[in-house]
Amino acid sequence: MARIQLTELTAFVAVAEHRSFTKAAAQVGIALPTMSQTIRSLEEGLGVRLFNRTTRSVALTEAGDRLLAEVQPILEGIDHAVESVNSFRDKPIGTLRLAVEGFTPLIQPFLAQYPGVRVEMSIDDAHGDIIRARFDAGIRLGQRIERDMTILRIADDFRVLTVASPDYLASHRRPSLPTDLHGHDCVRCRAPWDGSMHPWGYAKGAQHSEITVDGSLIVNDIDLVLRIVLDGGGVGHIPEPIVASHIAQGRLVSVLEDWSITKPGIFLYHPSRRQTPMPLQVFIRFVETWRKLPPRSAAA
Image 1: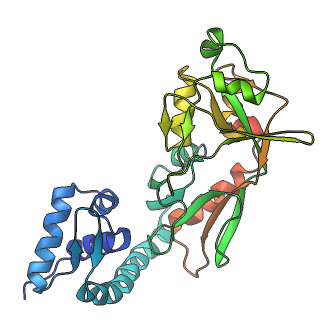
Image 2 (image 1 turned 120 degrees about the vertical axis):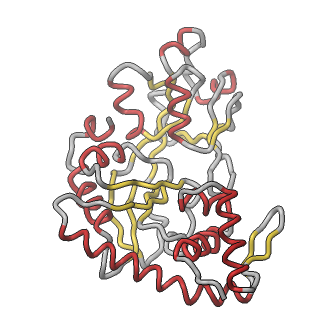
Image 3 (image 1 turned 45 degrees about the vertical axis):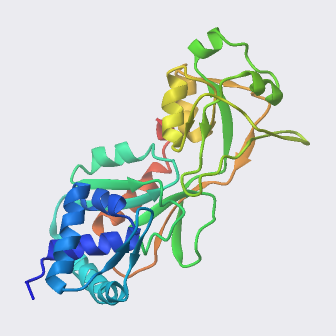
């Protein structure tokens, strides 16, 4: 049997965890054809098939299941060994893997403060099992979080605001009631974890309303919604912490001011474990400091 390379085992675990060659290639940082060739080489070296592949799915064989159970703890041990060296550095380095639910305004300030840390974010996995997918932590709206996680509040309960750019409003009549949105080009957001599109919710005193909006654009990333709305591409329904600085600087206008809906806060969550990776340790400390900043600075 040929000598198995560590890179081959790392690629195997990535495919096994994601059940996808495409996502695994993105995680490892190699091209998709290279990932496929790496797995073929591993299977040829072992003399067994590790995955059953179809055009729509990737599943472990019995041999693949056995190999994953043996290899996964070894790779985690290597990660911990390398990570332990980080404590001797003046400036932390390494990769912080985050599963996020569309709230990322603190990432750029964090990277500016810790240039040696690389952040890898995935929106698709924000509602998945972050341990199984080997994420260090997740950022999620609300406290719909597994019980065995350590939770840190990033933002308090927040309103979801209906916003548009001044250029858009210059050529479209400003809505005064939620039902007026039926006459507007609304930028809709499809939930990346299940593909659903929720109606826009509103409340005014005892009145509650849900509006099924329409528009020419559908995306699956709230940050992309923000960019489109800033460019005058339509009306957006976006959490206030994300748009507050743009409203303050006149790049966006909040419409339907008397109508809004309040959502639970935004939380950082991560597995409870003895050895927290250094990139996650400094990110937690950064979040704790970031929480104390004035609202306008935090939203910038």
